[in-house]
Length: 81
Ligand SMILES: [Zn+2]
Image 1 (cartoon, rainbow, N blue to C red):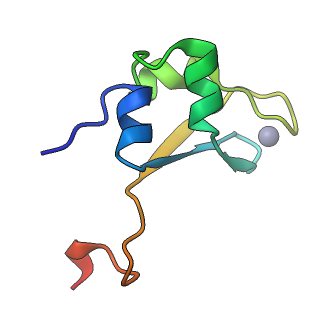
Image 2 (image 1 turned 180 degrees about the vertical axis):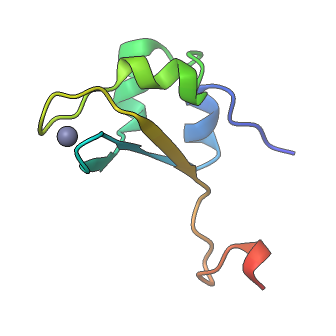
């Protein structure tokens, strides 16, 4: 089983992380840039990331992050079949 415990592991596994702010904005996080800033071994868990993320549109702190697995070539995650 692959883990996404750190930012670097999320990059290696091809995950994307999207951050949401309380005012309805959301943005895919540039994980490579985030790893540059925080270090690749920084925790990628929600509680560790939220305080580090601020909305680029309104300046609010993010209130949710959602990690998505890499999209498969045939378009659907395994569990939906
Ligand atoms: Zn916002």
